[in-house]
Image 1 (tube, helix red, strand yellow):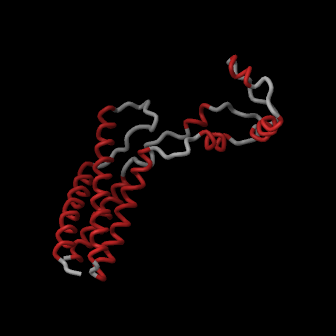
Image 2: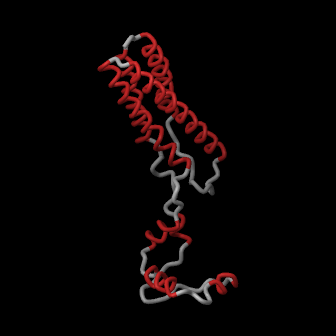
Image 3: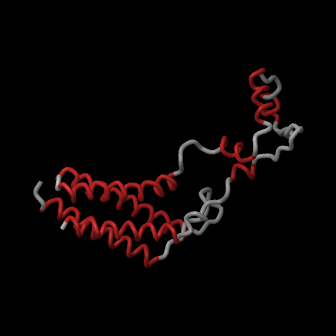
Length: 191
């Protein structure tokens, strides 16, 4: 029975991979919004001054360190300026896009170990990972469905990725059967 779950898990992972490849996930994000808002820098010229009184008073007496940093940074390419202005923590969407496939693959590795040695601990770890991965996947699907209904192109994270409905249904139903069979197998098989 553990081998049946392993094959079903591989099928689910394959359907999920195909779903990711055929989706608009790679095209869903706009290109570096920070780069468009930063001023273009021309070599040999200083950037134009900002016409805000608070910024002018704050820059009235720069320290030597700030002056050296500004001299170095004026030669930075726009991509580096955008990278410096980007948030350090990933967005929730990026985290889910990574966590769902990663959790599925790590759970698959634990289930392979359970299939080979029949250690109950490996089976329950794999079951916990697949249950958590399923919850993350359901959350991802729900967020994408809500974002597609809103269809607001001005969202900060860009438009919602589009997935083929039949593939999502196939992936989700195969995952549901995999979760159920994994729990049943971990309960029935003795270590």
